[in-house]
Length: 399
Image (cartoon, rainbow, N blue to C red):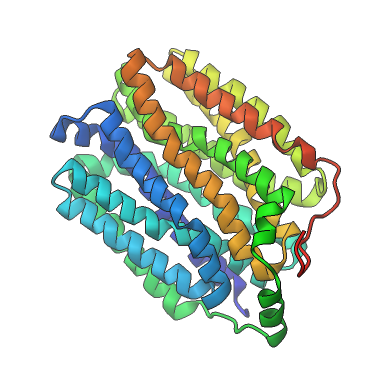
């Protein structure tokens, strides 16, 4: 591709919309709870069903990337997530409809990460993939840094319905730009023959796929658990105004942004082959910071620990997410990333629902933060069997 920078920019903007959608729902739960008089576990289903669909369609989306190309999947993904964001805002007049539209929106989201990974692998050499992918993933930091401030402003001026409707229109605009400006390079005859020879069943037996599936599942439990419930915790348990809670969440987003770029550069340049050890150390430090956020009483201290915690959490996430891009064949990277990212989306599905029940049963967030911290501990320890191993790349016969 002649203009790879333009491609990265457009993919970055699409990723920003994907993450902004996830950020906005965390703040929108507060007015939605008041409007529909919902219980915590019911709010958990609104967020959780989104990730259930996200999980169910990860592997099919990855398979489509390997079959029809990343550009078509990118456009379909943006079309679906934009359309159902509009439906959520304009037609969400009952709990059933809200859950349904978030489920369908999750279908749209499922194709985007795998399509971006496929685009990066197809257009960048091995040594540039970690940093390039980290640029795309840094959109999460952008969405969480400015997203909470934007979310509070939009909710105050447009309401939650207008906010999601506007987000849907932005997704449509980015889809049109991708359709017009991002070419889809044709497959070569060799790529087609190798893709046909490689058995996807081999991916299910590959230790990298299995262990990274579990690791990213555990990482996304606190990642999306905090995204969905932290604003509510800060407002209702710590007595912070919504504006102050948005600043705390934004501090965490800043940590994600810095870490996405910094860890991608660090791992890509200095830690090739030692990624599992980096993930383990980062995950354990993130678990400690998550617990310190819970016991902190002031907005400033909470912001500091959330900032540091997200630096380590995102360091683990970026490294786990990009590791298969170095060790799986290009022809199966879509399906491989889909399988691994299914673990992440399952974590996103389980976390908000589980937290909803924890809060309902205990009446506080102690159990919740123990759950989130322990998930990070497991995410770090589970990858240690990969430490010191050589590159695990699939052969056509499978491994």
